[in-house]
Length: 215
Image (tube, rainbow, N blue to C red; front, side, top):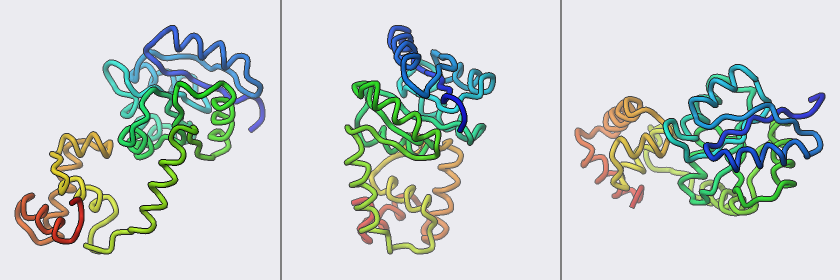
């Protein structure tokens, strides 16, 4: 990429947004493209400004940062989204990755970490701040070790839905966890029931738990 990386900052707190804008303006190889105070505004600004990277907060009024991330990635696959948030819990991290974020930083990370992350994702890499990197690597290492062998007829997404069903989540909670619409979840649940040859969610849960899924 020739020239500085153009960055859009999305955060509903003007003091933090303005402070980050000042920080970005002082970083080598990075240029501020603009700011947005909500998920809805972020979609408009991305379409208008076509930044290289979006720094996205998760918790905002109206459209969440997760939904905004998924929409940006779907509409503009060439734009890299890096989540920059206070939320360090596993659910937030992995939901952001499922939504298509290429990086996950905490607001406590310093300016040099932000600069390195912005430049890295602009090159097509994935970046995680020190506060979450070890858990992400551990998750995928464990996942490779316990690749599901039960229910080979299910797709990877259907395995995810079945596991969440077995954990007792309803369609709304599954939709939020997987960043899907509730209609999509209902369709996936129906597919799971058909492939498992069961009639109800309760039967699917029982079959899943018998196989060690979601227990």
